[in-house]
Length: 250
Image (cartoon, rainbow, N blue to C red; front, side, top):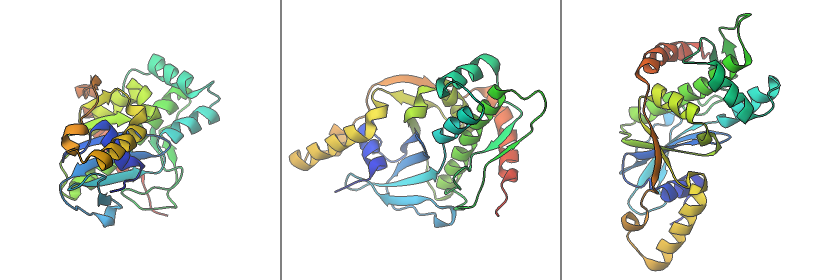
């Protein structure tokens, strides 16, 4: 049985039991959840496929721009690097900002399936700093994951646990923002950045030995767990409604 990079990553990070999932913060973003059955939601561009292990399915919400938005805002604002901008955001912003960002720099898939969707900043004033723009980008990507979670939930999926993988996982501030927007704890597991390669190795072993995937594909050790910030949750719940209202199909 073959699997794509995300399904292999799920095997590597141990997301094979129904309800287990992960957020991938790469150039694009993926919200992946293992499911017991086929659970489609094509109206909101949810991917529903066979898992890489027998007897399992998975759903994916796909956001076409995630960490690439951070790369973009770092470049256009003249930040020395993405890491430098993240440090600036942590030093200068203390909580949810007042600037709103739509991360549709490459169109969007889940839930809009709109290749013509475009990005947007709103709420700018003379007082807006580079760090405010950077934080708005982190939050806007978080709101896009909230859209993805809503689309999966609409298909009947229950998300019981979420890990974080990908280059963007290096920012714990981003993790705190995501946890607060989604209202779910996020787990950081060792080797998360190597998930797909490790998963491919596990799949090769399964093919040779015929082992039970549930015995082999266990989650790696948990390094850190980030909980939602209750005060941030209240602010983000209101901002999410503004985010939803800001999207206008072309």
